[in-house]
Image 1 (cartoon, rainbow, N blue to C red):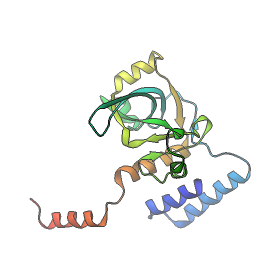
Image 2 (cartoon, rainbow, N blue to C red; image 1 turned 90 degrees about the horizontal axis):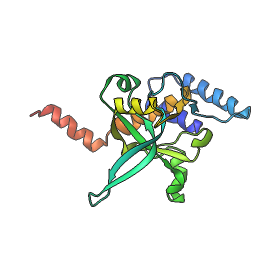
Image 3 (cartoon, rainbow, N blue to C red; image 1 turned 90 degrees about the vertical axis):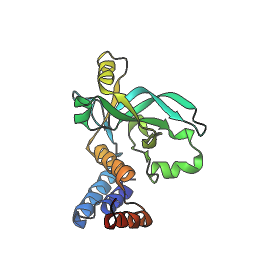
Image 4 (tube, rainbow, N blue to C red; image 1 turned 135 degrees about the vertical axis):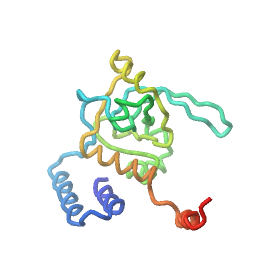
Length: 195
């Protein structure tokens, strides 16, 4: 997975020197040879809640094809920037789902992060989990902090540096990847003929 991540970062951020990616690839390769498992998490810390934290449960609402509401209480990953968590009224969080709930034919794509909207980051008890960015909901930040303070909900994981960088790259590709060439052509025409 890490090798694929480095290849992905090279493509996503082509401004970086190839030697930096090669050095990172070699360091991770050496780390793996020493028998360590790459892990993306650490226990929550005194700064929590922060961007990328996993909360043990939040109520999510989505809609089926008939417009019917679907409610679920799930673990959640905080998507909003840490500054927004501290200073804004609303923040975004996405549900953490069990990989076992998906067809076996999708497992390979999920754990290799080939789906733009799904985020897989291994470590500890998260090896069988995936975050569905497309099901993000907004939550009142003061309410979240109050529930954490009263221990009605808990921060159970915080991203370490590796996890945080994977998280940032995945958010960038989900929300800000390059558009289809046909759409980009239409956008160019919009520059030439603004309304």
